Amino acid sequence: MRSLLKRITPAHIWSWSPCWSEARIADLFRQHGRKSATPLEIAQCRDIPATDRFWLLLRSEVMSDRDLRLFGCWCAEQALRAERNADREPDPRSWAAVRISRRFACGKATAEKMEATWAAALAATWAAAGEAARAAARAATWAAAREATWAAREAARAAAWAAAREAAREAQVDHLIRVLRQQSAKA
Image 1 (cartoon, rainbow, N blue to C red):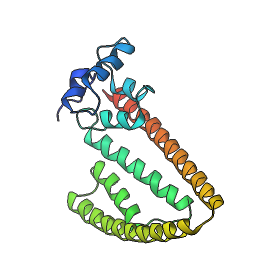
Image 2 (cartoon, rainbow, N blue to C red):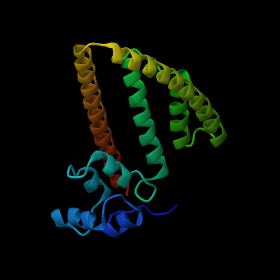
Image 3 (cartoon, rainbow, N blue to C red):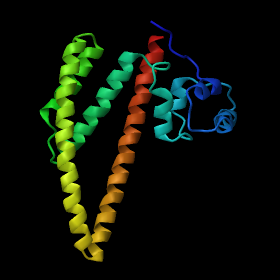
């Protein structure tokens, strides 16, 4: 098993082909008076947008494959629960895929079982995507015919969805911090 990075340097980040410039990466480390940072320190750095922290940390150089898979399972479960809470019960194949993936991460399921389960979940995803596209087309047609007050209501709903996505992203960051703390405690 390869060793995971204990500290991340600007050179590491640059070698991963980021969208940030080399100067911006170096400036971020300089702002914090560091030449390197632990994965946990990066996860806790609110100066870096959550999506960029995920890009930096959710990689096999930083986290074990097991922890990466379990983190992905946790995120998928949160999304499925959010759908359930919105009265849109997810397809059972999606729940099964998360359950089998978690078992695979813990060495309790075979790769073949995981692949078969994920193929079923993908089929469920395509079916849901088709229905979502049809629903979006219906909604767009309806929205075009609505009055301005309806458009304002839809804008408010979109803002609420954006806030919910941001809250979910912050919950993901918080969970990632817990995973990294556990990983560093094991090391």
